[in-house]
Length: 238
Length: 238
Image 1: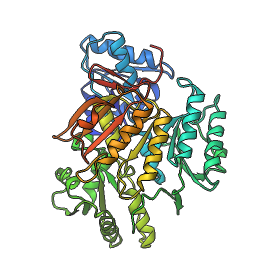
Image 2: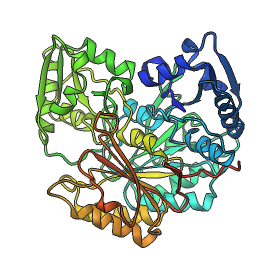
Image 3: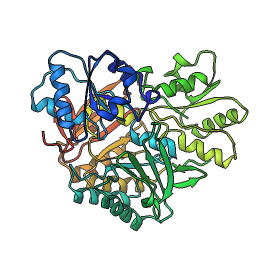
Image 4: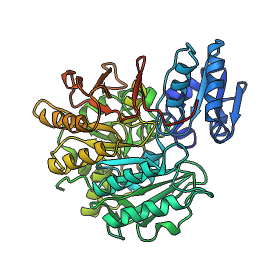
């Protein structure tokens, strides 16, 4: 289970590149498999679409149990909203006996933060706003807790064409606990050629173009804008 | 500002390695500078000790303002309890006009999670238990909020020789909200030759060897042990 990082070859680790290179079979979401085309010549590539996560893991495990070396690809880090957990679950449920290695990658959160400045220098929470797998009521309570505890928040899956209300509700929750000028950063397609980084604030960020390839970072009471950077100071005396 | 990942060359990105290679000056904490010795031959290396973070950033910025290309090294990701924020703050305070690039890395949290299984598949919080820079009362309130909101928790700087009470208090807080059998994973010196990974639970993990090079991951109500893996299922129907 290989994390390929946020985008191109530069943000991959050598461990990830070597694992892909020595695999005979590459399994992944179509879009991510394209990002590693420089490594997959001559290999069997099994690319499937969104929401086919279960099938993808089963295919990878089946091939591995047949004796092939398989790289199951995740964007960013495979352990953060990636394929690692699901594949381990399916391996146990299907009693597949294969050696599994999880290779971490640069997460989308870390890549977006680096492009924005240093918003995650203090304590923070990582939440997905997708209610496909977790009830919205659970997510809402977590947003409330995170907002009240003055944690910086990294929001994955903030908005899609069909799902727009959640981000507005999240913004309203943070707005009740934080000033409207609190910095909010939006990183879209970070690390790819379509990368778009915008620094905004709680009162206005909802107007930005935000989609499923975006990460939204909401500052806390210490966060501030410094020129074009988004910083959450950790409290050093300088 | 370069994140070198958790340990050796395999978990570095190519962007990090290239930045170090083209720098004339390398600045970092002694222990981290040793981890990139394969890249620093013939370069000026300025290695300083713990708690000299401010001096380290000032030195790096001064050298850059003199026209040299400087790599300021952080372990893991520079934006997660690393040097990125402090260096940006000092650049502004000292009015240093240099081009700054922040190069993300595989965080210690992602590396520890990968070694343990997939504990971070759902929403989680990242907290430092060090009260050198943040008042313990703030940290305690955040622990309470995270525990009550059923978030998985990643604890940085969990314990040191002088500072032992905080982790015990954190454990007590989680124990009030979660069963004693809740999985707790401890990764120490992850990605290095001294790596030590232990899977334990809330009732017993305080007895483990845990220090400043350890990351502690506390599961939530969905987390479970599966063989030697620590998993937090995301809710897929398999």
